[in-house]
Image (cartoon, rainbow, N blue to C red; front, side, top):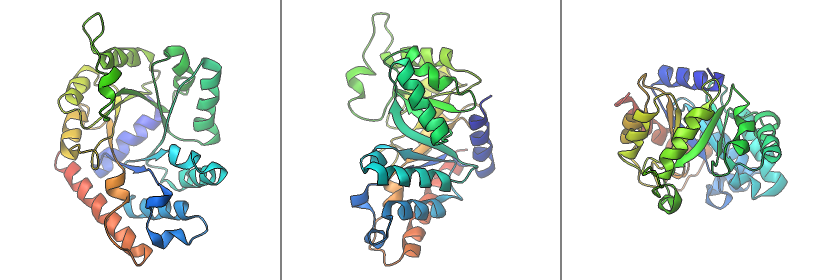
Length: 274
């Protein structure tokens, strides 16, 4: 079985937590106390990690917030990856996929140059566009399946000629693509009921579940419906609602206390279900 999957399930069991902290670290939104620093986003990320590390099973770095700042942003991405606790799953939320030779370079970038444990990918170019990612058998590959955004209805929920919604066809293919148990899917917490349906259909896959917090999903419902039969196999992502707590912070310690408080609340919600 994938070592990334084993590591994460061990962390979930030890903490009784499926919390994934989303580092969607938008420069314009970080508190003013960080903005006078030489590398404000990096120091903000470090504060979030320090405050949440005792509650988190995973960290998800949304690469768009780093790529948009050019070389400075990519340096912050690299340094942030180094600061993620090694016992936690590190996810590159990059949503990559392309023809095979290009995907091979994407896989090399996010699994070697930046050694993330996992990546998000898009399925609609087919298996040859994803095979280079699945060849890294010790990693986790999260395939977009049924996402939390309203526009998921445009394609993901369309009914195919055989009567299945498209997201079910994606699920079936992902189950056949995995190697060494290294496959996962992205399923939104806002898809109540459907999340449970997908879990029942694919108990062996690892789930990345976004949509809790600012998008309105329920943490407890996500854990209840997304956990596998061994009470693992999933992480539930929270980004804005956790990393941007309300307040006019006069010090980094005040900010960290606020993040720690929010992370502990989410952790308690999870423990009530696991």
